[in-house]
Length: 480
Image (cartoon, rainbow, N blue to C red; front, side, top):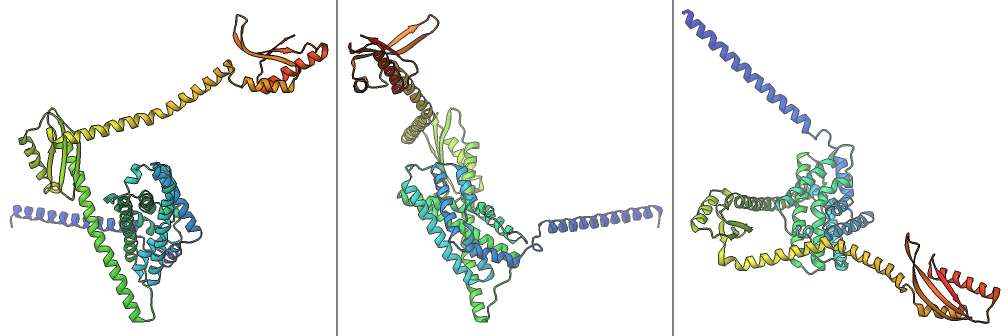
């Protein structure tokens, strides 16, 4: 073998050795990363399964304190929705005990506990009935009947609602499974976010005979409840919660079959619904993005747009210069390149075909501006009214309207029978440094009164008048 061959052989060996070492290093890094993530995220060693099941079963019951807390929290949430206050709704969630029966259903199906499942369904019915009844009573007696944004947002489920229900349910059940920790009511806030507002909106719909709102909100509540129970079921299965043992093997098999059937019935429609809502959300977001990015023409402006996933249509309303059909065809071809919008139809409204929509939009815009001006200026107007009333009150003092002169003169005659005539006026005086207005009474006394008796009567009359009229400055002129 030549020197060159030996050199090539050595280099090849070194390359193979380096490659093997790199491969070993990569395997070690991968193994360490897996071990790190396992130690970081593994919750099984710190899971107390028996205590978790006991805690879930304890929270299922809806009576006594839990019932009253639910009633009060529903009232608070209804007030928050009624005035469109997110802070008030969040405050209601902090005290709401809604999660018990729903988590109980998920846990019961996971561990084949038919008795807990029955009890959870019964208490869930009580919870829903009590919540809807409370909300209905509030919205029936509430003087505010307007549809606030907080209410309207809870009339149909979206992918965001489902995600909140899923991750809220996961957070709660994971917190409950931690050894030595009992999840407090605060851990149910995420669940209350998905459950309380829809139940209150059902009450609003019933109280105001808006059945589409009531049904939509009830649908939203049902979807959220299903996904919360499903989250509990999944976590319980992953953590290996032990199944309930039955002495009768046939009964155990039958209950296991029932639990499995319920799980399948819940899971399959839930997955289908999740995919459906996800597609709707993607369709709407892509439509908005497409309109913002592509629908542009010199001298024309988009004033309104709507998208409907069911009919696969996107309506765009333009104002200004007419857009040529060639440009519109280009927009439609561009929209066809977007996967989520391939089957959608782009409808452009412009010119004569939009006159009715423009008139309607203009009317809505005017109403919105007037309403906004009214709301913003209401406080200013109220303050001005108060200032006017104050000024009128002060002015009435100078006019003598602060009291009834006729009634006062009759009262004076009863108290001082020797008064023969009484007069009243506002005397304006000045010392050339300031000007003042002094209420002045002119009193004519019976000539028979003389000396000390007259002075006594005059002094008493002046003091009585100051107290009677609550005036510090008062002048009385006595006439014989």
